[in-house]
Image (cartoon, rainbow, N blue to C red; front, side, top):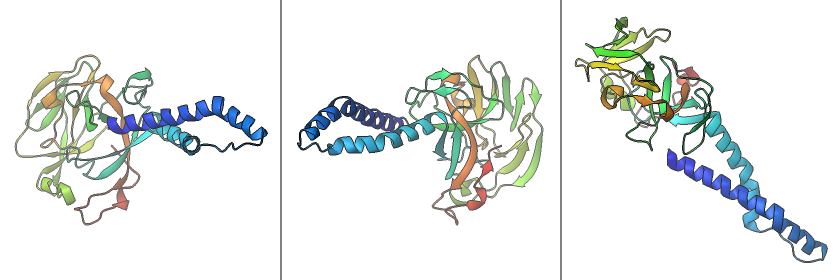
Length: 261
């Protein structure tokens, strides 16, 4: 949400600037007036700026460089993530980036195969999306007959049964629930009778191939191409709440603390 970042950065800078100017200029004048016995009350605007700047700066720092909350808006990552899940995103896993511009200024790490990442899609740079990294730079990814292949090797699959969705995810009921043995990161996926966007793709340098775990209902790299490294926002690592107004339970406390596979 670029608009929220823009507002937060603007308020932080404005309150800090007001506080700094007052401290360096006007506070000294008020002190002189007070020493002379005059009225030297602090303006309300300065009082607000001094009070809110540390809070805004702390929130901005945590959200930009440590962890950011994110709400799952669609079914594209079911069954791993449900509509209404609130997750935490590690903002330093792939390097520290400036707010608003998302420009990296400190390189720390790179996505690994199987990571669930939040990013800004190339065709919608003002939105935050979430998918799983399937292909790394240089990989050739195939998707045929409901199965993913990496560099010519088809991933093993185990049939877990028929999926039953709840709440806003009830529309996925009846899909096949499978465990996909992604190397080092096995996870469950949903498949439908028909396969979407079959083909093969070779991932260029500086890019990634991402897919949703709900293979029959995910707008991902099969449709719009590769994810540039510069568009990464962070790594999803924990579910801390679920809020789905159409589900029997609005807050699913059983999922709090779940790690994202």
